[in-house]
Length: 220
Ligand SMILES: [Zn+2]
Image (cartoon, rainbow, N blue to C red; front, top):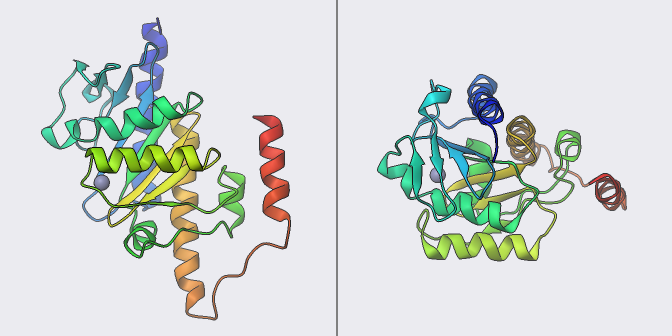
């Protein structure tokens, strides 16, 4: 069992990650987001349906079959349990998941355009490859969840996916690392869009991404 001290620590880290994303200015105008952190026994902590002004005691605990074990979820949040569960099942190394509607990243999701890895922060924070697009399906639906699982199977090293016509889903070892990657991806999307006005973004030199991916594989 994860002891209470560890669970409290993960709850505080998750709340801090949400705060940092608002402070960084990467949330959509609505502030819509959901964040989760893995516990043991197939359980995870999940935001209750909002992320702004969140307190640790407001997080719900979700069980391995998607049942709410503690706390309460707004109905809007119950729908997204499957979205988080499928990532935890597919990626045993993932400790936290963040879903946002970050505006520039969502532009790529709406355009069905993978986001290339062409900035240093994306490399540094763990996404040494483009962010693939998962075909659209209603949020939390079987179609959407199967689509996420299929892309994760096809792209075993990606730490993020764009949800077509919807937003961004990022996952990492813990809440802080995952939040850092959300910021790096949103900044990269902004840079791509800005660069498009002055001739377009340019790839890293040949072989750079392969070298970084190999280095990441060696330490993970
Ligand atoms: Zn959403």
